[in-house]
Length: 452
Image (tube, rainbow, N blue to C red):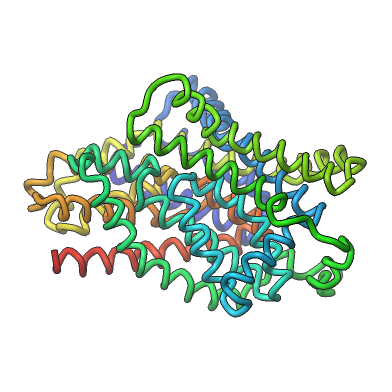
């Protein structure tokens, strides 16, 4: 199956998967794996190749995000056990006040995701989000959406995140990276506002599992949790397991961007990979555990962490299988070959193309780099020539690459599971939020294109 028929089959498959998960209550792992197998057969992938495609999609997710999820959850568990997460919440509240936790979390995510992948950033910052829920009593879902929104926006807009920096180089504005960064910051305004407004709205309608216990009673308040710890850790001990990994990843991004070579550059790159940076954070968290004299809980924390992340890892890996099946089909080639159909749309063409590729295969980075490769030879045809105009094309591609995050996107499952939401709630929060901020971004980009 190829062409329009394959695209229709893909749409039907996504609808069927949503119905299986939300209406028929089939476990997401089974639903996604089953749909992936059926779609692989319909797409005409040779039956002898399908097991390899499934295996590659499954293992690829583990190699890219699996260990990061485990280490991040492990750090979060220790921070919660020692009271460090509550200390971090206190520090954030002192800076922004108790009335603005949503804005604080959103901006925190936006800054962190400039050097750090949004998946890793959410795992790292989630303990602070959870503690702020206890500290302020605001909606857990609202803060989940705010954090996810902030992380996602800078992830697709602002170098040195790999997607936008690759698009800038492909489209010929790699030497004007400061301009691309500035335009990226400017184009973040509308989606940040839209995401914050939507978070407040949806937070009043949806309750996550961490807000209500199994018997319907409200879980422990912030004051009750704080009383259990007595004296909270000092600020440096609380912040180090989170900030040091972020600084290491940021340093690695800077070294890569300025093309620094040599032993120390390689050392920084080594320590700045997400896995090694979070490993350093895990060591610092363990030191915090010793300082708090809770070493007797070390084994149980590790064991509980692995039990918690197990389902997350397998569902995320299943999403990777779906993305790999799409990438192995003829869909991307078909879209690429018929790109000329969209050329009359101007600045909206790169947005729509990236949105189609994002929704089809799940990865924002892949959508950005693939779209940039298609757009590069068409810049003259589309009428984009100045550095500012091309930088706005980079932003339009980024806006499309966030529209939308659903079941074939590992970030969807990270946000949904760490936010203690069901898949159905994930579609109403994460998926709808990415649609809203994608459209808000494109509105701002279009306005800026009229000005510049």
